Image 1: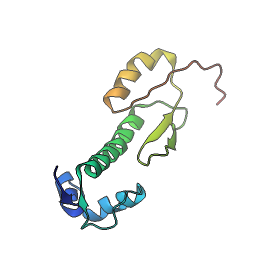
Image 2: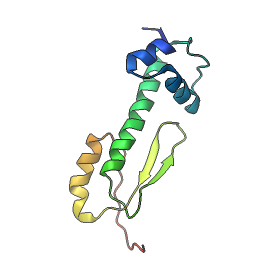
Image 3: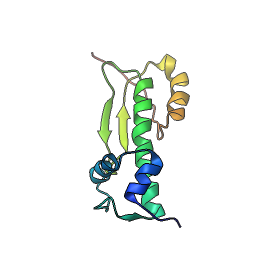
Length: 116
């Protein structure tokens, strides 16, 4: 079990300490200072949340939308629900691209009508 301080971890993952601390506060993780020692569980949570945000940006570049996709934050900070309308003809190609970009829990359902 490795344990390093927040500022050391920030350096290891290529972030400024202040930027990482801002994210930690946003996610409401139980870390009050850059001198706190992180255990493996907290490091895993931070890496997962950073990856989710990075994945969201990739997913949004791929998704079609009438204007922009609807994005809702989930109860677990750093996780998102994204909704959009896609033409049925492109869904077969779209879903594998979304999965490569990090999307999961993809739901497809028929749509009766779109009124722009």
